[in-house]
Image (cartoon, rainbow over all chains, first blue to last red; front, top):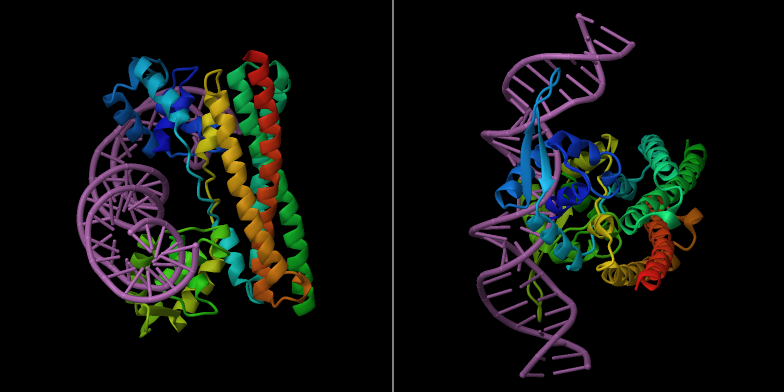
Length: 183
Length: 183
DNA sequence: CTTTACATGTAACTCGTTACATGATTAA
DNA sequence: TTAATCATGTAACGAGTTACATGTAAAG
């Protein structure tokens, strides 16, 4: 049930459209939560029906009109009490890692390729996070409290990425040694 | 659709029951994939219907009879070709990290507590992984190829856990400073 | 002329969780 | 006698993905 809370979280400081939210899930919010626009629009409807969000149409010229959603008083209440509920450990799933349990002579080259591809993706994410860090989060000590929280999430995302890059290098080394030795 | 492949993966070397599989998802396989027994039994039925698994009853005395599942020739084929399909990046979701975007004076103490609890859970996982590493994976160079793959997954799980412990320490430090400063 | 960005939705389906359901054996 | 381990399932619901559906404007 955390998508609803992720959306409420995104609306703490600004009113956003469904489209804006979809982008937010690709950037800063996206460090630890993602959602497709299809999921977002359905959830926005539910949250509005429950009175946790308000909506208003915004006319635009040269562009499609949009609907801006804002968090209501009840919405803030729901978000605040959610923070106090104990989060259960998020299951960690990764298809690529699962594939390594099937490592054999015929797929070792392919898996090396997939690791390289994934390494590239993680590098791009890290580049994005680094821009955020240098931008709004360059002086963490001086940030208001809420932003310090976002900073901590950003740091978690960055160090996870950095460890992954190190793992990639080790794995690629091992895979190449195996390929040469067997190949 | 990866649960089916996770199950096939677990059966590469041994025949296992649904119950055994549930345990496997809590230990070595569980590093990067988890599933409940309810999910497992349903998936076993589907895989058997598709001819990717075979099953046989095993009579036991003093214990309930069990059903052992084994991978069929078609099952191995499906697993092998799955490895060659490009894995899409697994979305990374974490409710606890999401909560940090709502950090404020009234919840800072609670979030510190949740971080401590999570730290403890991760420590326990690391302890389990360390036992595995010292056991079957103490000499990675000498492992057969498939086991080298499992070793790499294990290393990924371990370094992810270790980064997380470091992050916890940094986060707890920051949260305590804030509590003192504001409290 | 083609792609990207802007903008919002529905329908069908699959995946995953929670609750329900049962029952024997062993260790504390 | 209480909890843990062994052992297998169904039903209902909620979460998430994929496919379908439409249309304008700006940039290359």
